[in-house]
Amino acid sequence: MAHSYGKYADFEGLRERAVALRRAGHSRRQIRDRLHVDNNDILNRLLEGEPPPEWTKRPNAKDDLRDRARELRLQGWTYDQIQVELGCSKSSISLWVRDLPRPERRDPKEQAKLASRKRWEHELAVRDEVRQKTKAAAAGEIGKLSDRELFLMGVGLYWAEGSKDKPYARRENVTFVNSDPGMIKVFQDWLDLLGVERERLRYTVMIHETADVAAAEQYWAGFVGADRSAFYKTTLKKHNPKTVRKNVGDSYRGCLVIRVLKGADLYRRIEGWWNGIVLGSSPGSGKV
Image 1: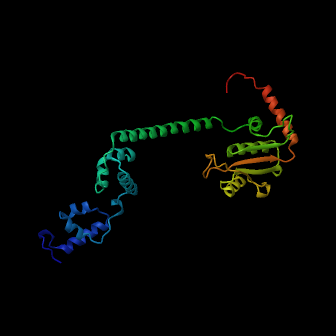
Image 2: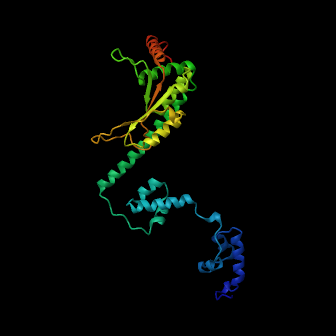
Image 3: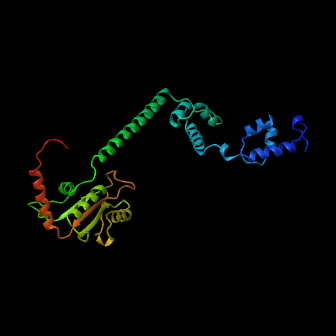
């Protein structure tokens, strides 16, 4: 088919060359420059039906940024605010949101509040990063515990969180209660160190009745690696409608009670070990 535009008269021949370049991975600009096609209409017709090469497509990350910028603009954010939030140029933001209505001008006091909140959110993020780094560094200072270190720590752990005998109430049994999985793990490792067989352990879940009881039971059984037959009936705590519970959400699994069967002798030794720690706790060189 001949075309009326002078230099494009051999349209079919030009199209064959354009298609060959396209399939070889050339961009529109490269084809335009190679064939000296300055008319976008003609270029579109030459490349009709030919998909662009993958390398010329916009990356998904940029698409995500564009979508987020449009979302923020619809919420009334300014270009400056979007730029700070997304870290992209104002020219890109302008291009992405130019078809959206301009946000209403906010009251200066409201803008000041928003800016202050943004600064505070940034400050909290910085503080949290410092906090996490400090915790990670401290964790690295511990290393592998010796048997003696685990033994002494377990005694202190039990005396802080376990049941204790009283002159007015004889309770020479070993019962440990905690909601922290880390504490439960260390306590069980300590019992293993003492040679207490797992068959002597019995468990009870204590949890608010409004929580996901079945999920908590399943979690604790898996965590301690015990058969459900080793669990007593779950103890449900009645909910007081006048109080607002804060221990809610998927991470709330109540407390786990661990009891050692025939544990009177073990309890007496634990109490004796603790008294020995008290007597021997005078500082030495002061070095950790």
